[in-house]
Length: 518
Ligand code: BGC
Image (cartoon, rainbow, N blue to C red):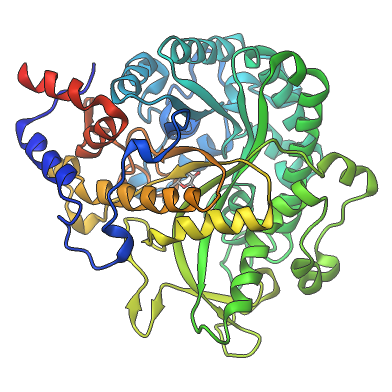
């Protein structure tokens, strides 16, 4: 199934394409038109997904039970008690989904491997051939269509067995399990996969699962929340430490046994929010500090071999240490930088002004974040609380990475827009997602500016290919270029943004041909 366009959409799209001013925005970067030719010829333009969010087939062909399988089945944890049992049924419809990507003209696709499909019980059981076959088919069919696979090894879902045996990321044993999983992936898929990301957003695993307690295993402590167990100040630090070492050991294994023969590259993905000082005079250090706490937490050890001094100064001995041997593994354990970027907020210093108790803490870098300055929002709110449309943040993020970690190529592996429930939930309204188009155009314009300024960016992936299981928000929050009817048919329908992306990528004449046959 390719993209077929309704005449109404076509007219609307034409309007969007010919008129950069059509939204009547005041923000400077909204007025800049953006074209495929503003990016290098070999630039990757793709879409991103993750296994639990799209696959479904949760008990099929030998798959084991994951932390998310268990969590989503606990009543009250997910909006509408949705689960990922079926999700987008990508497990059975992957060929159709690859065709959707092909019809848009994507040259890359980022997806993740379900740990429990490959090793249903972690190291404590056998490799599951059913899972290997599934991903082999995906990789082969992507390559057949000229789409480069970008593979995340672990994106939030791991075998429940590892939680039960030793509390997963709270234990250093998880490092061995992760390395075993990565080894099977390199062995089975590494002949064809040239871009690996070990872990998606280790800091979000820690913050959501062990500080806020909203994601599994739902650990937290007051004042952050009331969970049955956990310590919101300490556990996130341990969980990140174990993930960093797991990453470093997997990269070392890849470099020693696979990389030369297979010729691929490897990195790790973090989520970066950008920050601006609430008060230009008194809050600039707060911005530096919070960025060190979120970006430096992961990338300083990986690039330079240790945690940032800002973290050590504030957290002291609470922050775990790397042994000399650890440092040898971790320093330089990346071939590229991978970032997910959605939003920007203001940062306010809490050393010198009063902040609420739950933010005025060492683990938060003594920084409060807010979307408001003088009662005015920093940007239009998106469908997920805490996310605002601030295109200039994309340029600032790339500049920040370039300065803090010079000489590394960068991939923007996620950037996306979810509509607000108040935008309406009628199918026609969801399909007519001009706000998403506006979002991507303005963020891409900011990305192009950063690249003209010397940012070595090699690819841009839209989150997400299709509407999917948006973690605790279930199916109500939609990020997709394609609409998915989760209630009944699971049919995929291109939104206006899918047409726009196809046109942007050069599929415009193809669209016109298709239109003439309607
Ligand atoms: C995660 C995705 C998620 C998206 C939108 C990213 O941080 O990697 O899994 O769906 O944010 O919330």
